[in-house]
Amino acid sequence: MPPPPPDLEKSSAPLPDPSDLTTYPDGGTRAWLVVLGAWCGLTASIGLYNTTGVFSVIISNTILTSSSSTSIGWIFSIYAFMVWIVGVWVGPCFDVFGPKYYQIFLAFSLLTGLGSSLLLTPSMACVAHWFDARRGLASGIAWTGGGVGGVLFPLLIQGLLPHLGWAWCIRITAFILLFLCLISILLCRSRIPPPNRKHATSPWRATLPDYRIFLDGTGVMAFTTLGVLFVDLAYFIPITYLPSYYLSRQNLPTSSTISGSAAFGYQLLAILNAASCFGRLISGSLGDHFGHYNTMIIFLFLCVLSIFALWLPDILTSSSFSSSDSPVLLIVFVIIFGF
Figure (tube, rainbow, N blue to C red):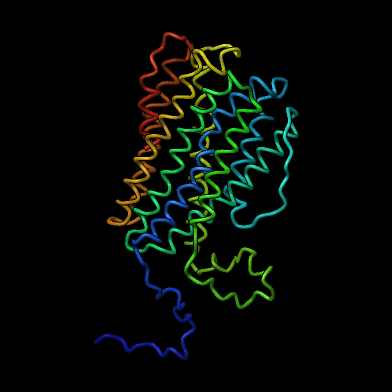
């Protein structure tokens, strides 16, 4: 005999939030326009994020030549931190640009990191307001923007930098980002009212992160969030250092880090991001049918397998850093890891 239903009045479990009963359009012109807006926002934010490998090579070899690799590494580490961590709260912005280390640090790590975070978080969240059953597919389509941006910006910089120089190359990139941001602002809309924060005494306090969401009694939410954060940060490492690794692998001089023989290093990054477009689209659709966590685990396994089965052997077999070594293993790794 089944147990009697619990007394709701005496139960300590919270009642369902009315927003959980909200219906979702799961399609229609307005919903897909939101996806387009999110796509533009992710192209600008994640597309730039996926181009850090190009910036790493240029900054270390042509701008901050007297700075150590450790110091330059902090620029991109803090940038990644700002992109993912500051999404929970946004602080003051620093708008300074120049050839000195602290200026590059402020302009790229802090300013660009904050700007990308401002684009990234709403672009990810707004799609969920319009889709439920097809949320994975819609999110996957929006996330292909990051791959498209990761193809566009490396090739754009590779083509413009030798002819226009660093300053105008960055300005043109900024104009493209501005155009994408304007479309994103016009199209991205929310439709589910914000939850009622009973403990918030003012609108400002309501914008602060609520640590109570992690206190579910089991720690599942906290560990899941931490795990996803580590995945995002781990994905950042190959994206940042892939072009630099290729230059070292081929033993190319500093003078060829912008064009010439080094061009393939930029193209490797473009190949990785092109493969990620297909991976994000397919994984989003598979997640709707087989579960998002199940799909994520499978694709993470492929990423780890590609590192140990392809990238590590390439490092070991090309330990002499001879320019005659074939980059076949590296190319296959880039395609599988990007996918």
